[in-house]
Length: 237
Image (cartoon, rainbow, N blue to C red):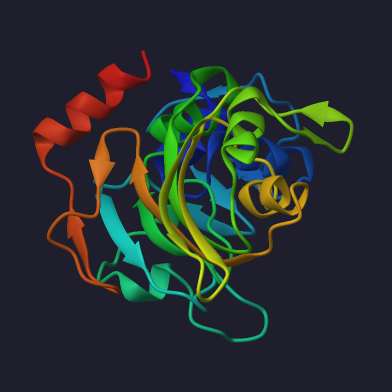
């Protein structure tokens, strides 16, 4: 037996946290009865429905996508725009692990494995995410020091980061910086640079945990190998 929210994430319905929301909202039925308690346990013999649609456990799938700009990082979009899920050729109900902004490109993992999603997105895991950032203005080493030591955003200081100046274009008044953070606050990278009076012009995630964009072009994706999946689980132990 396993908790209902874990079962739902195993079925690819959503992450465990989102599944808890669905249960609390009364959208889940077990054997024909609406369940709102998070502690209830089920087995594969129970009939579980979400919004009156029966769900069942899926074969686990894991993908690494080079997300293009102007693609929605979601499962569905109410405006009918292309989502990251639309780019993956699969019949399984996969979803992105974390988010990348509409105008941000780069590395994104997608899966129907709610357990690994829950672990990777939990703040305590401090997963490293590296971005290549093009900003307006000339970034100084004082700026780099502030980025690394933490910047106060909405009254809370960001965790320590790693930052490197990759290129300075004095002629066009532009800078290129590599920034590694372990948090996932909303628009965090953009807001960190904005606090230093540098507008982010282009943003690309080039690394997530131990994954890179090697051998992928914009819009391309690949399945993770069994070895990589095992490595990922070991990474978040």
